[in-house]
Length: 221
Image (cartoon, rainbow, N blue to C red):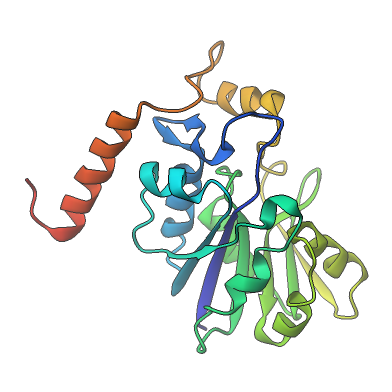
């Protein structure tokens, strides 16, 4: 099976005052950590959507290995899933949808979902409810193109005409960041009693990106 991963990272963060994609998390950025998770899944193709903060994100986040789709109108409610479908590989059998502000999703949850889904739509079932990742076979792409907002994916899951497979995932739905309380809760999971700076220093981020690119190029210098 040829599987494409779609990491949604175009959503704005007006209540935070800074691009949430660039919030510091485990020594890098929130989006960088989410991308690392997506890369660890070993997708045949990886797509990431970026919104109004695209220029800043490109400056600070290592996007190597991902096909970037610009969705500048996501902040005003437009779906970033729809333009992403235009670059999905023609060989793709299924699409796994993940979130760029939810680094706690595991590759085990992703591949359990892919392996066990038996219907055109699959969703992860955690101890406290349903959540990402979600899975859609190619036959669902036409219905995904009708989405007005990315959040409408849940309406398609809950009210759509196609059957849905719920696949068990370990623990509670992983935390995602939509406000400062969410961010503090997420950070406290690995750094009790403290919150790191909102965004890593740009020089440190550039150095880290440079080191990663050198490793990928095999120079070692």
